[in-house]
Length: 350
Image (tube, rainbow, N blue to C red; front, side, top):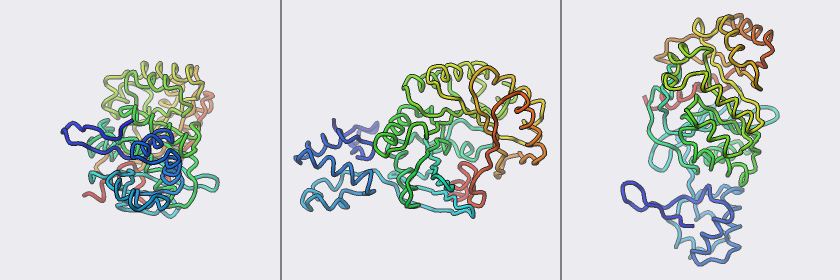
């Protein structure tokens, strides 16, 4: 294993150590002339003690630390931190190249969840999403995803129990790096795969590809509409992926993995919150194991949508329950901290 990679611009870059397994870190220290047991020490300092540079690892000699000082562990800097009244904290993290991403720590009485980003920006261009309005910059590398979880865990001084890939970006567009990050979060940080959710608006073939990795994560599909016509208006990329084909691929995922599908549905007043549309949604989902998460819209600037009334939300829920569709309403945390995805980043950069 080598940690030296050649970037497209032909400059040599050193791959960060965060994201490497115990075996890979052991191989690396041995390649630097150190005994194998140093690999376990390095592993513990990175994943358990939160070392941000090799200079922090005091069990290593100063002479050796000086020799490898240019090897990055791969940690970000907190660029901005916004705290909501409910205890939710939204972070803007500055990456090594200066790009800014969002991560969110969501505490409850029983657990700490981290909402992570998988890309800088997003190319899906959903009409109701602040991230999509900012455009796409690049994919995040595994260490940049893992770092978000460690950053939140350290800031809260509490173990992270759940991770949701519902931040900036489309996770299945960056599938290989997301899978590597999931495997590290599971094996090296100790988060159960069943406590990890990967969200997608749907990319042809990618849900099946995810299923082939045989992970036990929860797949969450951002549907947001019961018909292809309306979905294409809300999610422009859906033009290339008919809703029937998307749901067929979801059925295959449930069959292959044995995991229930989570359906994300943002309720937009006067757009997709009519009881008739609830009945259409129920018809689309009948016949396989699903759970619908209804999310009342979080208003953002430059988007012509409104939040539905509590009465309309209840009417939508009632129809789904009458059709025996499992459903819950998920109210966004952190409304005082620019809660919508990409909103804080956009506000800070404007």
